[in-house]
Length: 179
Image (cartoon, rainbow, N blue to C red; front, side):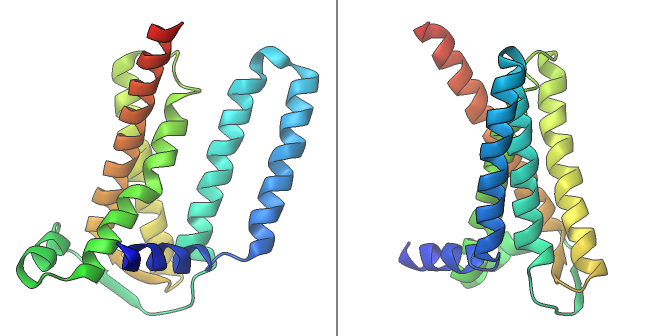
């Protein structure tokens, strides 16, 4: 588990500290402006802003602030599971976990402002969000030579987005019972 945390910290260090500070300052300014202008829609707008800012951070960590590499593609789905199962490869296991965890906040944030939509569209939207954003990241990584393009990454990111959405649904139901 200690190795996993070291790996997570190394991935967070890829993005320059000024980007984190800039996004935090931008969020604070946006929150103040939205609360001053329209308090009723402020919370929903702030969540959308958080959503897009988090998407920018994900793009930064996975594409823009990553060192150049080569155009590498791994086509067969679920190869990473075979590698972990057959070879006991802990590095690949850490990458699977990180790819899932990376998209959990996006799934959670997706549920909040979209909560007025019909339930079936919310589920479908979470899946589409995971597939499209992850597929877009993989495409950018390929175009800019920023890492290995894998079908498994899209699967794991989509799973993480769906898990975040399920977490939001559970929290929403729990809060409704409390009120």
